[in-house]
Length: 261
Ligand SMILES: C[S@@+](CC[C@H](N)C(=O)[O-])C[C@H]1O[C@@H](n2cnc3c(N)ncnc32)[C@H](O)[C@@H]1O
Image (cartoon, rainbow, N blue to C red; front, side):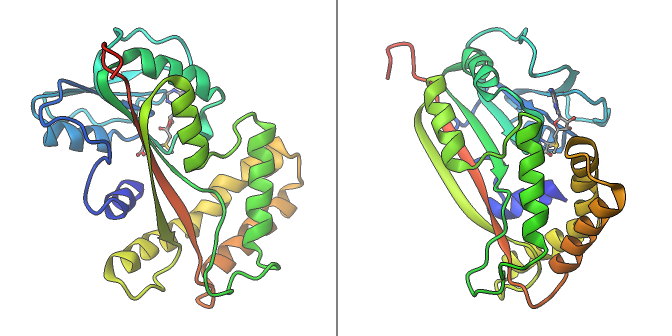
């Protein structure tokens, strides 16, 4: 569902970075089910695509130019330097405790003139018509989740934060795309309505899935209290009165060529 969401958010595209028409090597960091890696391998038959993840959950039946490696991307990298035309990271911010270290590895392994692209969702809900009142149960849920993430040493990121991190790592021409992701099918526009329908489905299980461990194990709350915060937030998410969205970002940057351009 997340992949479908990003495809709709990017108007059918798999990436925003303006990579060349015939890339040779592409890496997907924290590839998950590997669905992005499979699709990009089909899009660019000229490229060798590698997806890396801690969990061996990727399919075996994949294009011949796509493979998966099981590894921890927070440890030292064994890929050759200057290798990848594109290194893609999507929805991994809650997994990463040291972005500067990860981006140092990414920079080293990006080919001169190649790109890194990081796609992440902003944590907080917004509304433009005042329907997200201050007493909305969504807000305590996300306040607590943010507190838990900070306590874990993995604070939430957004577009401007990632852009700064990419520049610090040495990437040039850093570009940020910021789009709205509706949380329910309230928009009139067909594409946004579809996005909202997916988000609403995710809202059915997402609050307990994201919240319970964070609130009980990290913030040491009682289970019943944690469940109530998750269930109240989920009910608010399903309240058709609220016209809520969050921002989703793509941030890409280019590694300078050997002459520094
Ligand atoms: C929310 S999923 C995103 C999956 C995929 N990027 C996508 O957008 O479809 C985050 C993934 O990061 C992986 N992950 C977490 N920590 C990692 C690490 N240190 N090294 C490699 N993968 C990691 C998880 O196993 C999970 O599959």
